[in-house]
Length: 355
Image 1 (tube, helix red, strand yellow):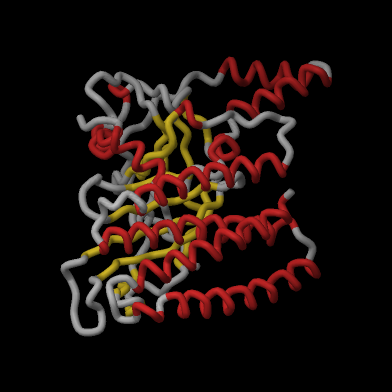
Image 2 (spheres, one colour):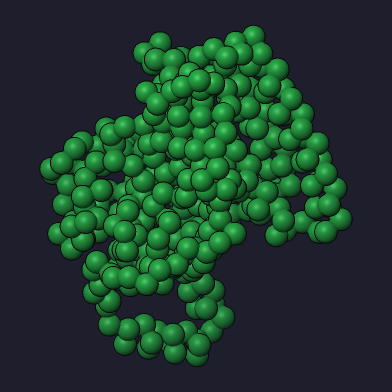
């Protein structure tokens, strides 16, 4: 099995309505532990005092609210070979934003000297996970949509964009969330085929979170167990958003370090700078979806107009940033850098509403 070095890359990489649903087969039915004790516990909780109930609620927040524990974390579906990945970022309510891209620098032509990029921005929501056993939760895809129309093409910055579907989530039946500590010998072989890029020969248990598509076997690898802090019941919303942004900043810093290393080709820098912009754009979309659920109608109407004005200003600034290298291989890098800078600033402006 390959080493854990690649997992570090996965955890620092970026990212960016029709519901996809299909009947299919399950790969493995995890053994569900007896619920007799659970039923007795529920009855006991109902009859006990408010103090006991409060303790139980706190325990549920700490142990069973998987989405709350993983809010702001990235999950990536990739083979570890080639310039492709499909990445999603989870929110506390189970909604997510994501991006798929696959760069082919060799596929160039008239008007797109910098190659071809298969691309998809997507967003959606998972159902509330149901606990199957100590290391497995089951959920379904409640809805999913793409920002671009699948099959459309356009040329931007000397790159031909071909818009696709959300790789890894185009066909879905059941999805399993596997937790760190899951015994590897009890996990599906088809899952391990994908997860092996983050494992070593010495591993006997899963060292990271993962989302497994039981229909297509596509696997999204997430953060390691020691990188996720279980939410505390007293955590306030401003601490939560600050913690979330800190994780994004860490990923962005890793990308900036690679961009400044002097070890990348121009095409690699163009692709990585695009991923950096996608990282902040995905976070912006995630925050925006939460604002729509929490702000009153008047405030949201005003904010929507501000957002439209900001988009126009950003697009104009990005276009201006690339003019000096128009048609050249440097143009995408200049435009992506400016887009990432402005989007990051906007993320922090909107994050204030969540405090």
